[in-house]
Length: 199
Image (cartoon, rainbow, N blue to C red; front, side, top):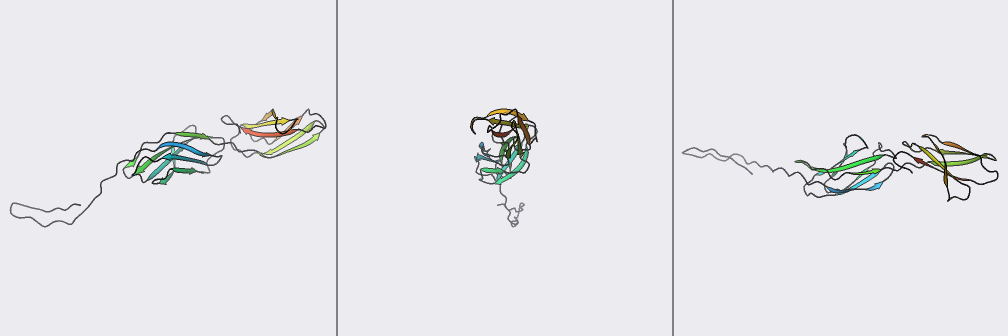
């Protein structure tokens, strides 16, 4: 609190009105121990250690495999997790995260950097239809937006011992398996892949 009064060699004035001010906080200490605790195709949860006692909150940044970091969200003070369920998240994609503490004095240094690859979405609705004694037609639903293609596997024995018989390109949802033996049961499964992840 402060007050002021005038004076000269023979007299002193009364005091001014009283005023007060609060000193600024120090910049908070950087968070540490950043980890990814949940990694799904369209949701990533990160967690960190709060090392400061004067933050007003935390700022969360994300970037892809290339490019610069960008702010994606904030939390309140003493919060140590953040859920990224941005609709811009894509399956089968590499993402990096970092976090800093903030208050009125400014931002802390950033935490350690952490990264994770979102899983490719699983193809669904696989059907197998016999076209002839030597051909079976497969169809499925493409749920991924970043696949490089699909790997088709077959087993003539059971639903456990598969081997890859073909690959097809992205957005392809059908395949014909030919040269088969008549009267034989065949098992099939399909999975998506890209350059950085195999489902």
